[in-house]
Image (cartoon, rainbow, N blue to C red):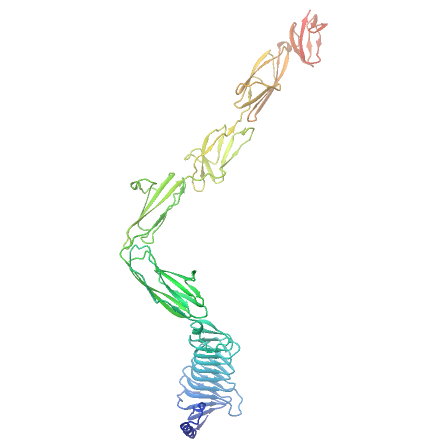
Amino acid sequence: MKKRVKGFLAIIISFLLSLQLVPQELLVVYATEYTVSGETKDISTDMSGDTYVIMGSGATVNVTSTGKVDGITIKTPDSYTVRTVLNVSSGGTVGVVSAAIDSEIYSSGTISTLTSEGSVSLSGGTVGSLTMAGGSLTVSGSVQVADATLSIPVSGDGTLNVNGSLVYNSTSEGTGTIGVQKNTTITSVRDLYVLCNGYEFLIPAGASGLTVGDMYGYSISANSLSFDTQKMGYTQIASKTFTITNTKTEDIDVYTTSIGTNYNVVVSIAGTSASLEEFSIGAGESATISVTPKTGLAEGSYSESIQFDIMGELNTVSLDFKVEGKMQGKGTASMSDYYYGAKVGNPVIASETNGVGNKTVQYKAYNAADSAYTNTVPTEVGDYTMRVVFAETATYNAVTVTDNFSVIYLPIPSNPYSLQGTKGNNNFYTTAVKLVPAEGYLVATELNGEYKEELIYSSSTYSEEIYFMNIETGAKTDALLISNMLIDTYYPSIADVEEGETYYVDDMEVWVRDANLKTVTLNEEDASLLGNSALLELTSNGGTTNYSIEATDYAGNKTTITFALASEWTKTGLVPSGTSVRLISGESYKLGSGSWTVSGDSTTYSGGNNFYVNSEGDFTFTQQ
C-alpha cells in the first residue's frame, strides 16, 4: 500500500475556496490517500478523518466490523486486469464508495454514499445515497437506503428499503423487493411494485416525484365511541357509527385486526353490507361502521377497542360502555309435539344468563290453572303447557318461560294395510281374509291391546276399529274404521239329497239355504226364493224324474246336485194298470199277463213281455 501526502494540494484548494473559484464537485478533499492493487487489505481500525482508499485491479479490501474509512474509489491506476472486491462487514463504516469500473462490492455495514457500475451485493446495513448506473444489484436481508437512483433492476430475496427518494430508470423489474416509506418520492420509467408498510403498491409508469401517500389515503371520523350507561336487564341500545373515508384515487383495503368481545360491529359501504374482517373502499367512498353493545351484559364497565390495519398502519377506535345493577334473566324452552306411545319428547332448554344447572321443569294440561303443574311428563293424547323456571343467580333475576305442545296420534300411513284372500263376486271374499299392516307397523283391535303382525277375519266385518303401531318408535295411531269387509266361505246347502242318488218316492220337499243366497234353479228354471232359502216341491210323476238343482250365493259360491225321484213300481219295471206313469226312452218296462191298452191308442197289447218307448212321456196302461 502506498501513502501519498496531499497537504500542499489541500492548501491550494483551501486558497481557491477562499476565492470561491472551486466548483462544488471538488469540495471533497482528503488529506491522506491509500492505494491498494493486486493484494488484500483489511481495514479494522478507525481511519476516518480525511482518509480514502484507491483500489486498483486485483485489489481486495475488507472493512471489518471495527473499521472506518472516509472514502473508497475503485479504479484501474495500473496494468492489473483482475476484478476488484470490496467487503464491508456489519459494523464497518465507509463514507463514500465510488466504482466506475466493473467490480464486486459486498456490504452489510454502513456506507454514506455508494455509486457503482459494477456488481453490488447488499446483505443488510445502511446506505445513505445509492446510485447504480450499471452492473448488478443483489439484495439479501433488509437494507436501509435514504435515497436511491437505479438504472438496473434489483435482484435477490431481500428488501431494499428506501425512505427518502427513489429514481427507477430501469425498463425491467427485478426479482428483488423495493420497500418505501409512505412519503418517499418515487420517479419511475415503468410500472413498478413497491412495498409500503407490508403492502404492495403499484407506481404507474411515468411517475415523477410521486409518493404512496399521493395515491392512497384515508381519514377516520372518530377515534372513540361512548355509550350511555344502562341498567341490568336492558334489552336494546342505540348504535353509534363512524366512517373511514378513502381520500385518494386508488382503492384501499381495510383489515379488522381486533374488535371488542362485548360489541356487535357491522360494516356497510354505499348501503351494502361488507365483511368486517376485510373490506375495500373505492376512491372517494366511505365505509360506515356501526357499533352496538351486546345485550345481556353483566354489571360492569366495558372499555374495549376496534383496531384496523389500513395500508399497513394500525388505527384504533376506543369503545366505552357501562352496566349498572342486576339484570333480568333470559331463557328459552321449547317442547316439540310427540306421538302417543313413543318416547317422551326432550325439551330444548337454554339460558345464556342464568344457565340450566338450576332449573325446574313442570307440566299441566293446556288452559288448566297454574296450580295444576306437576313434574309428571304427559303421555296421554292432549294439549299441554310446559313451564321452566331458571333460578336466580348473582347477576340475573329468576326467569320463567313456557311453551305449549301436544301429545298426538301417529298419522295413519297412506296405505295402512293390505287384505289377502280369495276374491269372489260382489266385493266378497270366499276365503278367510288376512289383514297385514304396512311395512314397519303392527296392528291391533284395541289402542292398548296386543299388536300383531296380522289380523285374521273368517266372517264379514261391517264395522271394526283397528290401530297401528310403529315398530321402531312404539308410536300409535288413532282408530281406523274398517267397514263392510264381506266374507262368505260357505257354499249353499241343498238338504236331504245327494249327488247321483235315486229316491223311490212319489213326492219330496227339498230346502236350499245360504246366508247370501242369490239364485236357485231347478232343471235350469229359476226357483222362487224365500229370503235366504228356497223350498222345492218335487214329484216322481208316476215314474222316474231326473232333477238338477243349482244354488249360487252373492259371493259366487255355487252348489250343484243331480238326482232322481222314482215310483215304487220302477224297482221291478212292472207297469201298474190304470195309473199314469212316466216312461223314459231307453229303459226296459214290462206289462203283466193278459191284454193291455194304452190311453190314446186303440191297439191291444199282450202282457208278459218287455218293451221300450221311443221318447219320454206320460202313459196310462189298462189291463183288460
